[in-house]
Length: 251
Image (cartoon, rainbow, N blue to C red; front, side, top):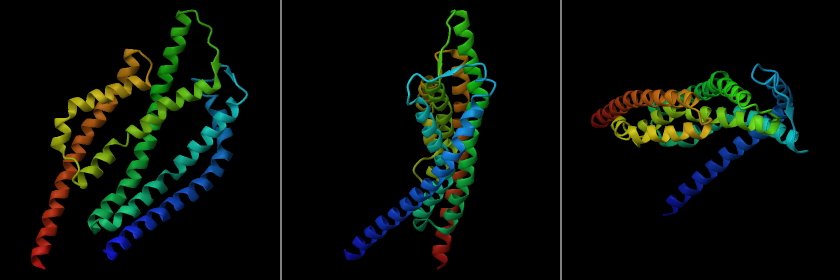
């Protein structure tokens, strides 16, 4: 009983240690975020999709709000690899050596996918949506008065979810290796997953068919890729289990 309590205390202590490391790194990254926020905001206002728009602040606090949001977003992106590594370090003692090596390799893949999601949404989807909005306003003879807060909130709404959604293959691979899901289960729930992705696409895009398709079709493809990855991970997990059973019998 005492061993069990000590084990629980050890886990809590280890978790506390990991959280402190992440919080400390985030604090240092936030300093970098404060230094980088201004040039990035200025740069984004000079891009093709924003340079013809006049940014307005409708509240006294709009400028500081956008500045702080960028600073903390930059700090999060810098800290993201550390968060993944600390998560891996926390769960790795409960994994076999082969599983430790495999799950550690997920970290760079996850970072690449996160940045790819941001890049896809910003360089491909966002310009198309902004152009559609501008053309619609012209057809309706609406004089647009753009608030800088609203502009960047819309940018965040469109880009950050893609960074998260592009984690789908890594999450599926990880859950498959842990035995929580299987490729057959993913195939079985495909229609429900598609419906959920349709809803997500509708929430982050304007009510227009083409932009909706530009979001949902890549998400459908990502889901199908995740099924393929799940099959590969499932076969490897079964092979590793069989190998460990053999080694156990030999011992």
